Image (cartoon, rainbow over all chains, first blue to last red; front, side):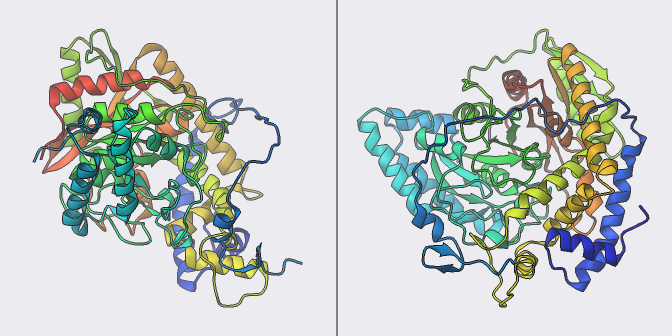
Length: 94
Length: 477
């Protein structure tokens, strides 16, 4: 990894769905390179035959009966910025 | 005026020698007097607090009061409180009023605690100074030119200044312990899984826990006892509901390991000296002390930040501005543009940076070198702690390598800010419990001592903390 170009920053921003200002792109390309460079310290650690620890202890799926519980739909719907009737209004997807 | 402990308040309210309404009003007077300067609170919930206190008064007559009857508590603003705005100190959640209580909040209310307000933090918990709040920075009550630490800076500052009897914080990489050390109070990060995370707004879900911040060890133990236990709403919560308040103040035969890595370059001499002085006191009380080498700890910081940022990029993908939160009003018609605009205006720069770095670490071509590598190093760290706790009851070192730094000192240098977490992140990676307690001061700024133990050994940590508190006293300016 040789540094993070403005192009790289724009691609990641598109993946992450965050619009950036030109100033932010500039600062991010510098700071991200610096931070990623620091992360390379891990290359010094021998991790051959070591399993990744995605979680601190073994976890397994927990099942429960699929029973509806009470919730206050009005209270939840009130939080949506744009609505049509009792529907949350979203932009066109396809 | 001498501050009453949470323990004393609850006992007084139960007996009837203290009025819950009066005590709550007293704390609001202190908030009105001091919070203009400290800025610990984002939201103050006076009306609902007085209402809660009145209900407690009513219940007293029926003799049905809980363990925290009438105790004013401040809650970090990334923990959901039904009917009280919860923002994560982010513009994207401004105006969000949760339709439910976090499990920890519900349990505290059931014990009679009174929620007096929501405290400031670094946006979504991403920071170590509370300067990355989207609204304002909180100041260290011990010295207003310095940061209170973070990310639970509002909670620690409120407790240190007596604006709240106790507080809830959250700790993803040190966010309870760092501000507790910087403000001279007691903070406990519980074992991963001891306290339910339901209603804690996720930043890095395999690392974080809700925990207590208090002025003394017994109050922290009391609060922990009230929030610990399994919750069906969080399938990773496996803790037992236990009483941690029966403390044994003794260090006889206690085996203390002192990791060399915690005293290396970058640690202020005043901090090392104060922590060693405290360890020697424990030795004087009969503890056996031995230095140990925790080699992999030197790699914890990089491993931690890669994992935390990766999890953040996934957890924060939910903020689309549709169902709740900030929505851009420029009239973007397609989904991708609207979503990107909501997040442009809604997130602060540090949050954007961490999402971007996490997106990078998880992206095709870089996954193995960053995310997978970090998780393997994490496994080595877990194993190293497991070996250490076969030999030692507790590990002791500094909480933070320095005392509280000045406001503005590290905001422009992200790596310098990250580096300040080097002593706290190992416990999060390993999921072990860790606490910070005051052990002295330097130039009027508190020094925090950190105690770590094996999973679910909070009792051991609290015993050591109490022993030290009995020797050193609670922090006084």
